[in-house]
Length: 180
Image (cartoon, rainbow, N blue to C red):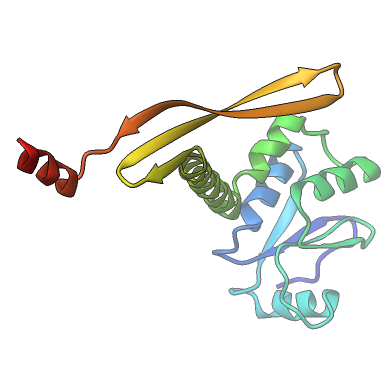
């Protein structure tokens, strides 16, 4: 491998790193010419990468013309650095977002957030059902809360029992049949 030139943009990466494809997509969208160095295939590039990152094999690492090093930059940080140095076309916010969403970690985090949201909604719905009713020996009293706004400053809550609902159980059915 030849020694990299100081006026070219270098991108150190390796296959399987979820942060490399978004960086490559942003560089491609900006029309930036760069040299991709796979640290798994190029041992000299791996040595240079560890020198740049203090002994770590942190990818992606971008070396901008002039020697500025960006270790594991997000797409927004890279976009900002390219704009500051006047390198390439300024990619739109939409293409930057699209490049950033190429990282599968974000998809996994979004799915986790969705699952947690659904779980919280189900839990609060069940908890609200438990709080809004009282079981009194076979009769379930449904309580409703009427909230009134008084003079714009005080909230008054008034609990009232609006209806009683009979819960039929096997024991209750048995007692009814014995009476007949």
